[in-house]
Image (cartoon, rainbow over all chains, first blue to last red):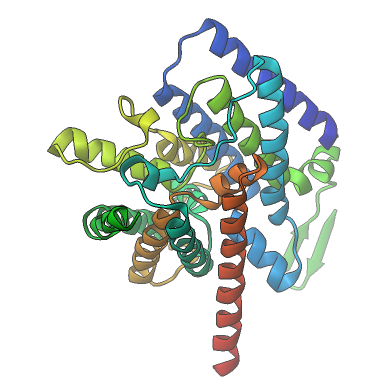
Length: 177
Length: 178
């Protein structure tokens, strides 16, 4: 039953994606909104959370949510290869990049690696205390959880703090690079 | 089937085949959907550069907020190249999708949430995003990038796991002290 559902989902999503890309001009905003709605719906039904998956498995050996994290890797490999194969593009994704920082800053990777590692450690540490990853907090806010809503308000302040206070210090690293 | 234990009254339903087989793997299916949709969004619908940015719980809210700030107040905050003209609406989609699901299943209700202290929830949101932006991605995008074979993302994924384990050990230590 599960494998049939999975096969139908994979074929349907790839076919719909290809058809939309070929025949309907959709912009980035609509694409991200639709993807967000689908994943938000599925996330609410499945209680999906990457951080809780690792935590549950470590503390009580419950692998239900950890399967979700493993699923992303499986889905990424299937999707990456399927999209590559259908579109005939060999250079589609895959090149390393440094996300937010690479757009405005030109810092050596050897400086970025410890920074990113510290960031990931902090994200993992505090996400356990907030009972979920950023995606799960969005879902909880949508369900009506006050803590999820306040978490997102705090996140908005965090983004502004990062932009105004931390980014100028990171830009100093450009000089080192 | 009805079970009566004093004042308590339980009604047991016979589980359907669907709930037996599909529900235990729903998180797995959601994960696979995330990986596939991230690749489709990037490959077919051109949500790039950067790589694997189809789904993210950290960089998309940041891009959205920075885009709004740049548009309204003329600031110069960093926005990913693909979202310069039109912002990422994924965070709104996440909230809308979960609200729809909760509404459909009669679970939409205003309640306190797992973090009891309101100020603590606010501070945690602040801290998680400050740390997450040093890397620039949430664990979902990190896993997607790891599946594309990016070694840097794999190292970061290991760091996230270490952070989670450290936090679990801290909580266990704190509970033992009480």
